[in-house]
Image (cartoon, one colour):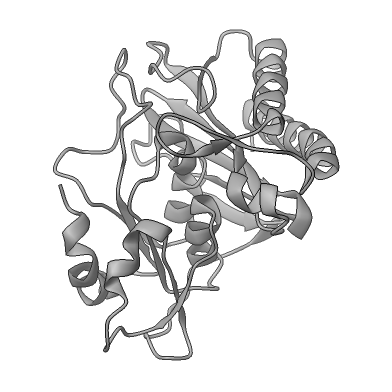
Length: 269
């Protein structure tokens, strides 16, 4: 790992762990308000957003930022970060210990590095992935610095598949796995990367839910299926992604795509 990527990893780890320590003080002790899109936000979300943006500006002053709480327009610069300062706000406010901080670093509109920290679980995922080969970046996916890979097993009623609240329509007889609903988009997908689940689907995630997870999923060997007619990446500079839902299916290996894809066909747009 060259010096730049070592700095990126160290920065992401140091920043999310520092912010996470403070968020643990808020955990279960804050009131949420409802945003225009129906999602929840707290003072903890806003504090985390401000802290992470300030940290990026100090460490990488030439990097722009795309963030859930304050900046929805895709920057025109080659390098920018996408931030979800608190993924799983409903869990956070209700005292459910699955929530995290999501960072994704983009190069020319596509995420090439992701770091996701879940403070209550003491779990931190990170990964590198550059399909273009332009950055000469060695791919890898890690949980607490240990390499991870998606499962190579076949579906059964002893394997998990994760849903979001808006994809419960797939709950029908014959579904090939046990269903779980964790309440956090990033964790749903990272469970596939680590081999915990064989698949997961999110009906209405936003770009900051997905950006940090995408490189980890790819490097872990899982398959990412964007359930929309337009390509997901590269993002288009100058466009507003604030209200844009990006329905996504992730499965542990390509051979499982035709097994699970028909169950989520209704999410295609």
